[in-house]
Length: 62
Ligand SMILES: [Zn+2]
Image (cartoon, rainbow, N blue to C red; front, side, top):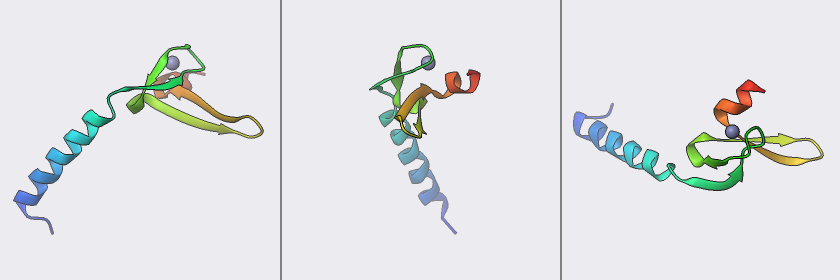
C-alpha cells in the first residue's frame, strides 16, 4: 500500500512524463500527411512493408 505522500509524488512524476511526450516527432501521418506529436503517434507494423505511422485519431477513421 502506498502512503499519501508517495501517491502525490507519483502523480507529479506522471505529469512531468506527459510533458515529455508533448513534442513533434519526425514521423508523418499517412492519412493526413502532417507531422505527428509523440503522444498522438500510432505505429503499425505491416507485413513486408515495415512500419507505418498515423495519428491515433486518424488511424481509427481509415
Ligand atoms: Zn493524421
